Length: 398
Image 1 (tube, rainbow, N blue to C red):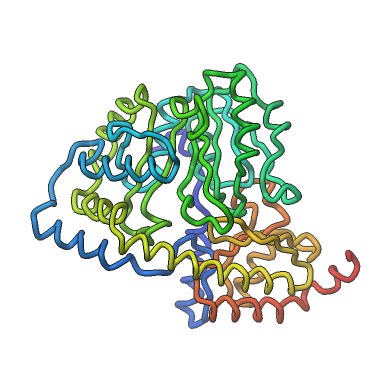
Image 2 (cartoon, rainbow, N blue to C red):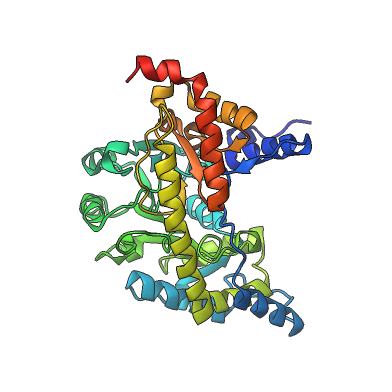
């Protein structure tokens, strides 16, 4: 028997591959510090867990409407309306099993084989994986360190053509921590006005993890809400990765199609997790927990960036959002994949090669600082000790 040909075009998420390698080393007795997985290390706030337990006890263990419980859709609509300063109707919301279905369903619904999609690079690898799977033509736009890990908006305008069907944005961004400013968004919106049939998938899963100013959504600009899909969810903001619960805000003309895709794939998200989502999005205790988590991430951010900048051959900008540091390692003289492997095997620190996020990620590594300050400090010291292996290259390439 043979697999379908299209399966060969389906990629993966390298963080889980590196995690598997790290677990194998741990099984051999080696201590590994995990800075590879993009997962908050905090427990889900107690009020949210309590709401889920209560829902199970009350019998919320059966099918729900495929688009989600109306109360959950209402909570998500109110949350987005407040945080993005736009009016969202509950019927524009679809509750999904994690955030990835919002990507998958949007691309399946809007893109035919050969259609052009502008996609940031480096970026979350599942965008390109799904686009390749369905046979889209990916038009990469390079994320530039010298532009605070944003892309050149003039270059973006040049990439737009009558064949463009979708633009993918991610702010705050994985893997760089870059944040698109209001000025950036204005230029993007201005360019898109010339192409009214181009839709936008705006991945805003890290919207609450912004260290300076406020998150800006492209959907909040005049004329953009009816052509934008907002991807959000519970995983990053409320430390609920294992709950597998996300949601998308869709233009009204698109929501019925997304709901039909949900019917055909997963039927619906679990009822009791949707009840927990209502508490997460509306509860005062969960809001306080988010602020506490952000304060802790801010402390860790400073420690890891300062530490990485002390390692020979490393140069690291301060991320403006999310919980990733993305140091430039070109002066080590090593490729990103080789350095990832060396650091894991010899320093016992799991991180990700920048190439896991696209070809323009070469010359960078991604470190998640969703770990304790103690472990982050220990990881930095281990890499410093290992750096003797590439010091010669650093000296010859000042």
